Length: 230
Image (cartoon, rainbow, N blue to C red; front, side, top):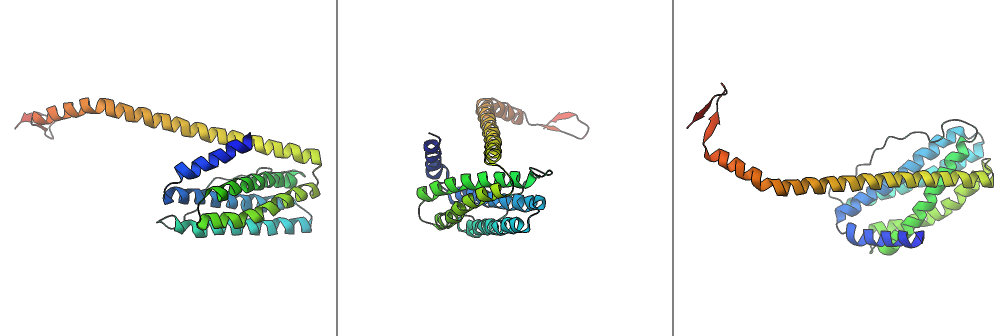
């Protein structure tokens, strides 16, 4: 059921929300930010890994993720009139200390890779031919390999199968909660805009009428705050 909802959401987004190049450009900025975020967490997570081979694997993986971020930045001008400007977020270490910090960070990256692969596949199927579709198809091939790679690395870094599954479940719950909060914020903003717009259109004619009546009285105010008729 969740897969069907995701597919429907993607198709509705592409068909109705991405009708303008500007909307697509903003989505591309979001994809670039997602890939760049993965790079940041990979390189921060490397600090908690002692095995040189595992550190090298994480660094290589981060380079591939960085290439994806660069590709999204490169196609941005195809949909936007302004130069590309990366989104900036306040980031923090998810697991800053402890012997399990490395593999827990890898669990976070693994979930992100899995979700990105599924979403990019659906988008590539729903989009018409163009730079974004071509890039997504290329990136999906890399991401599919990254899902398997990060899962294997997660276990090699010391996590048991049950610990890995629990960590991945925690990450998904946290991501779902963040998505819920963002959706709630957008809903509140939409309601606020609707109420303010309604108030404007309902009260506007009365306020405009009062203003016109005041102007017809031809009264001006002087520096001494005394009113004088012309």
